Length: 315
Image (tube, rainbow, N blue to C red; front, side, top):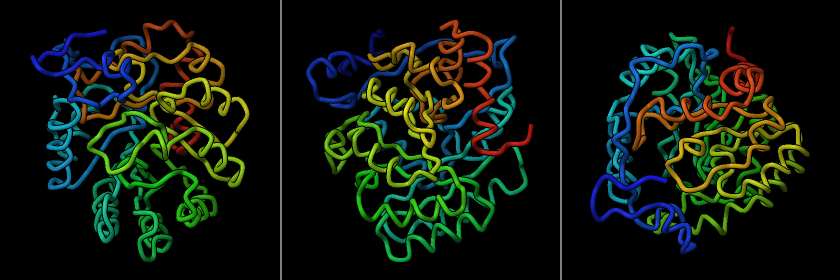
């Protein structure tokens, strides 16, 4: 795949081979070339996986990645991140964040609401820590601030998708019609997490949620990595499941999804990057995706069509 830039950092392919997970050791960054704008000839691009955190939380996240994940190429805070992507041709974005301990979510949701209130190109998400006191009320308050979706992260928040404490979250999202972006895939597994992500994030746990909450609009990032076959089946069987492409088609990690996962239901796929928390060029993902020759209709659906329908962006 690629060679780590920094000596002493492991290659993702090696740790996958050993069954230890993508982040058994820190990975290296890539010194790949970046463009000044999106490639000419692409359909409109909506990035459905952009992280916007308050400055202090961003700094802690970057420190974690530098120690346990990969080098952060773009240390841009929230407003800088928005300006960077819009200046390079991204039309709209979904702004994600997640609360990692009780008592943070209300302030984080207010930060997100204020940040995104005056820009219709940005759909801000609400977050909450499942199981914290008044979790449902916190989430309803966040949505009432104008935030249009919800973001949770099983690895960071240490919960399984089918944990009973998640029911309150699913109920709020279902009743509000708010899409839930839930990092429920097993990767990237890391010994730095407080939970075994392979134990809590099995695809069959997500399947239970899809059956139990048919009105929930559930988006699983990273194409459900690394259980691609399982998520392909779930996507074919469930109309309440969406997936995003984030980091999986960038050819940074050693696994590539099967082509059928990208073409069989493009109306269930959206494009995302994980910007700014990247170890490679900001436009690598979209270039790799375009180079797969998926066909004009599929590419347009993945880059903007599905996202605009799911998140109700204006055309």
